[in-house]
Length: 433
Image (tube, rainbow, N blue to C red; front, side, top):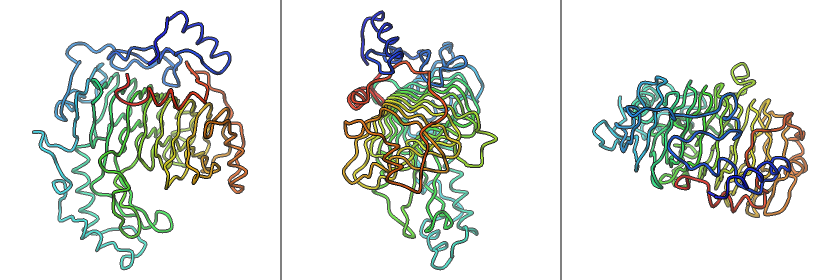
């Protein structure tokens, strides 16, 4: 991160807020990355209403360095609100037994489940377009439950999870921040949260789809969460290497980060989201207004979205501030970046897009029952671009208004969009604190 004299930084920071373009480092940029570091004041939605401190007050008995799944589960505890500081060292593989032995999909399979038998049972040519049922579907669900017990890891309130050094990794894990408050996750690589037992849904879309579980990180009904300097990737198991069955990709990955079910006050900063399809969802249902309306307030800043197919993010209901992010579209298969969903209020400013010639700029934005977003001072290919105007001109049946209905104030640093690729490329991701 950038280092300058604190007084100079403070002066420049004030000027930046007045001008809307920062020249100096923010408090977040100056923060040392110490294990007990709290989210700086004013740094996105997670700084509101008391801020986010995580496990800053953890005592010695609740301060851990963990190197395997068993140690991590013990450190996470039973979900009580006791402040905890958990340092992850090296690679922790969630698909292991209590003795540390690796577990394969075959180890989880039970009740006679096999992929070959499942494919034979539910081939649309013979089964049709009704939902699978019967012995193989029951066996698939039972097998999935066995994997669920190993890979879903629940985080309690007042917890900081911090990777040690440059190589801390959670492999195959789905970290669950559910129904809690005040959590920090920093400096961890989340790789390949894969589902051994995807479910076939012949009613999903025109041709059906394979649906999987296990987002790398889930914020579900929780408040005050700071996700910072992490890397999210499919890594060893890219979708491009997976087979297709029934004419559809055998999708073993769900999201990289989801913020859902009334979650609120979240800041995701300086992360890398890479090599993935359905990446970041804020609000998971059009019918969840009673739970989500007035919540799902999320800030996304200084993140790198590289080779992402879609959902960067897709938003329903929430007030989402997306600024100073760099979006690098894949050479093939790109769908969209900003999904404007029902009652969403996305404010997208000073972002940078790098896209191949094959990508139509009109498709950067996708209308999903939303009505408007604010998109201002963004760059495309190093030049200023009115992305909303490009969308409305290029997709005439998906017109969107240009006012999200609010203006963000919780920002400590706004870089000029032309500087974003260099700044984000230098400092985003795990191992960069």
